Length: 178
Image: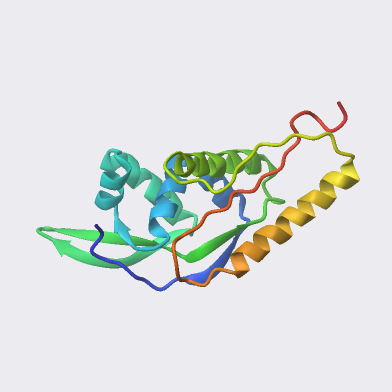
């Protein structure tokens, strides 16, 4: 267990810079951010938790730090070495991909892989994969409804009780003009 638990972080961060979005399109970086959501960790603790070599985790931590998504929240002397403990700069990241449309599909895929990993070990309340042929106006209407659902889910976070996850995605399974 990490020895540095709580740390200060902003409530939200709008992630829109292309380098931030591209950095998040990596499964290990998603896992690191997930582990840092509730408490700070050192690179050694992250490596142990993720079952990955410390050098590999250190690389991913450096990328996340360089793009401003995590930062050092505390340092401690451990024998002759100063160990850094990292935390997220915000508890919640909101994504806006207009500046880097090429980063959005890999980011979405990484998010869904993270969700799939969690679902595999969770007691599911409900799930489904549904496909429908929709007119463009109907597709946009459902996208707005999904956004409202996510906003409502996020607004109901009381900070108490068990952590509940929601994954929402919609995409064109074939080109829109097919």
